[in-house]
Image 1 (cartoon, rainbow, N blue to C red):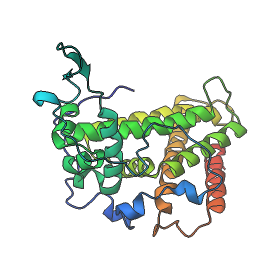
Image 2: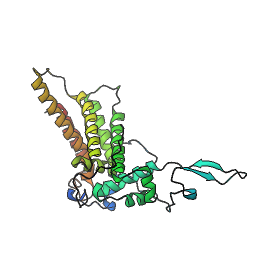
Image 3: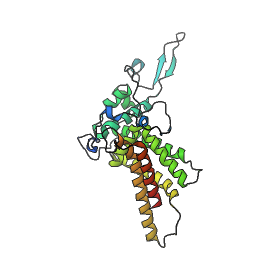
Length: 289
């Protein structure tokens, strides 16, 4: 999915409080960054990445990102080795490290309260290096959210590829895959949850709309076949009702894991019971009964 740059986007709500504070649980790093998969022996393995935004960062002493002779990051720098004729070497891009650090920071603090300085520190670099890759906090937030959305979509896609027909079993496989992904990636899941609760920027509201539409189209494959609606009005009403059910199901599956963190409203419910209940509720939403 293409990412658009919206350098002039502004927060829609203008809240001075952290976007996560109103949710009613501790949003400090100590509470947030615990991988819930450790508490869920049944969790499978989702998409693996070279650096996981949901894992504690391994930050070495900050190096100056300007490179040799003040060159910007990722630009060619002179390699002093060789017989007097320095060869040109390219500094590898650190854009992906910035995005993954942004997921961790935005998930803890929300869009309004997070700063480029905090994200740069999390990534182990200086703010100018972040601005080299992203013109604004809004653009970085869109990239971080898109990263989380694409990862969750990949988990669902791997459970039911396009060449696998929709069935009751494949639907449960998808629900299980999404559960596992949210358990293994609590920061990404929490960022998605905060965005579903209210878009922070015009760009991320568009991303959220595209994300929902993508999964709504796939979820429609699972609805039981029935009689065709007698007229256009009835067909429109049926489509709207099914869309609402799928949208509710998407929001619920994303919200489960953030609500399970320490002090959250679902933290006292045993994992197996909560997992079974989630699958049952999702199934009933599709079956319509």
